[in-house]
Image 1: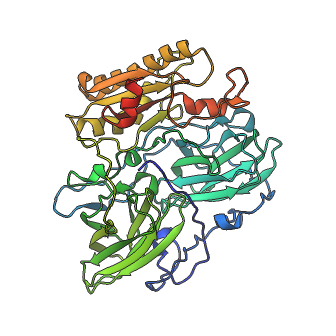
Image 2: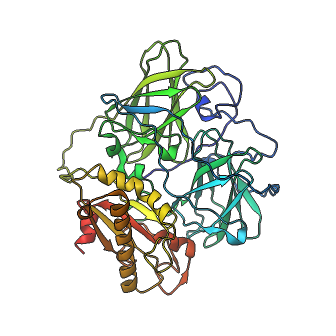
Image 3: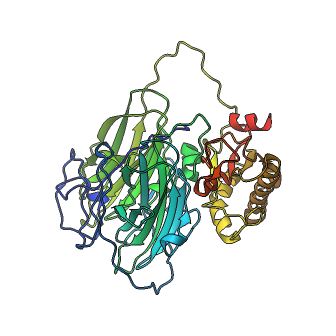
Length: 524
């Protein structure tokens, strides 16, 4: 489950649609529901609201638009992220939870010159207040004609849209788009960015609405390929379906916090009017496989239960409704192998409904194998995919193993501690890596100390048993994971250093000791 297929969802015109779940629950008149439409409801806005983006198949050249108006200085402190209050869990268990966990918070610069460097292919979490602008910078890699995807998620419900905008170094506004409070990923695609060039992103809350928005940003070059091992930048992605195998799961109020569903388990939950439950699942390695999704609306006297499937970029792939008659509604769709997809489940908005439901995902039947199957590890992995804590989540003082903000570091590693504590029999490896800004020997020493610092934080702050964790420093030469291309020309340790790419390589990676990747690392 190490590959993640990627594509994009964008807004479409308001229509009679099952996409009622994806729009602001407090906006728009009531509309009827059908069971086979796939359009998304548009959020009403003001004249200054940016237009939505096009689909990835219709990549457009960046267009220059007008500068944003000046906004007043914020006067309120950030608030805690709001959650939907929806619940879900494996139906054989009574333990339900609606907790949503975030993983760190970084503030962008107040202007283009002071923009915070954001490495490619890394998730960043932040908070922006009404009237505030946060500036980030990223540098493209050396790939010619690369196709970049800039993805944002608004992680706070009951707010207006999060507005990201893209600029070049001369201050030309190339594009803007919005991410609404439905929690759906919104992605801007472009193949017009020059290689080895710095660009800028400014993020703002939809002004004059007094919102405080927690958000996720990720910038990806979808053209670049690598044979190195992939890492996950979200604990949900890392633990996969194992998170739900204990009998309960956490639903999310947005895609980034989606709760994972194990294949074949019957999920039971409750969803309220105007709120959305986000769930996720990962397909197996079967090619050209059709998966069946069956929902039952168990609450009489309600409108339809609405379910939709998205890919990681926010593309809405299909949707369907389950009526209050209690008859099961099934949707079958062919999905890519070894790929994570997302489900949003909602009650048809503005009907004051609370719906109890069940959901079952039926995977394809495996064909008869004529070859010897590869043996899986004897012990179940805690982290199905190695989990990466990079410089955008846990920051160290330059060339030291001291946290810049220990409180933020604790928040970032808490989900890791929870996963480890839930599996006291597991042995965990924490591997440190660095950018190519020193000798390999010195970088091995530094990365080993930083891995120890994360281990010590897990032990001291959360009570993880010390003997459950091993550490190792890899520096840069022994790093087997996908790395930022932090030197130009690539691979030349004496070449020009690219800071935004180097930031991706300053990290610690958490994985199971009995994971084959960990065994490869430890046996070298």
